[in-house]
Image (cartoon, rainbow, N blue to C red):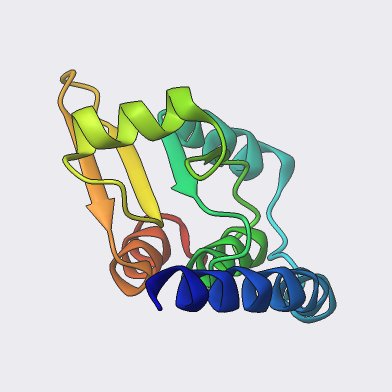
Length: 130
């Protein structure tokens, strides 16, 4: 019975994945406008950030939309299919759960922030324009 249930949910994911991705493309908000100097400063700040994600996870889509809205060039790392990124997330973040934002602070400390709402709140607090 268990293999049948797994097969059902894998099939469901195969059907829903394209719908999730198309929906993301159609509903991604317009990026905020910044001066070239402000955007260059934001770009430098984003070099210390990485988003570990699963491509079709609705919570990851939510965070990627916020990245687009705030015009943040944060590196996205596929923790679902890339075994190196998955291992980094498990070993350093403590669990394989997406989305997860890796924040490298200037003092060398690395923070792993889970939960889409917490990530979006942090991004908004750090990068939102007035």
